[in-house]
Image (cartoon, one colour):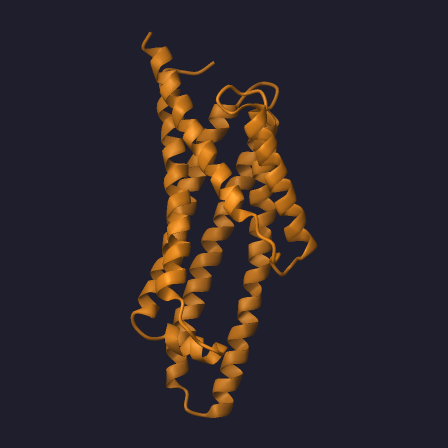
Length: 234
């Protein structure tokens, strides 16, 4: 079923996914620990984001996420190869397309979001009239509402992709019914929560469990690749 080079692509896909998740989680930690500032109002936050080092750190964080998403696209493509079968070919292809669309949405969201934050943070320092500053802050707050819609679009495609991937995982050696069942349940619950509270993100988050499950999937891809390598050498 697999060519001699499949073990390389599947294993490399697992590594790409693993690095992607670690980069994404690393950015979350960096943003919370180093970029986050103790401010009381949106105006104070904007003023802080327009100054060093927050300006550079904030933009850097928003550019690392696109890199992570590009790596995740590779992981999706290699996972589709790993799960491809005559029975589930259409499901795997749809899941892969949805996953790629989700990653593209996340790249768009983070590049635009980071640019708006740092550029408007820099420009607020050029304003002197109080009424202009008030209008400027209100405009920024309104622009940030767009993030909620883009984030919801990402959730729909990303969660649906993983729900579909769990179907061929059910009978695939290396993943199995337990891992597939847990993944299906996690993403189904996450989807319901996000749609129910849309466009506002839910207050109850199970994203740590989702991230852990995805890490396990990527590790399993690496293990499957290593197993296929041994089979081609015998």
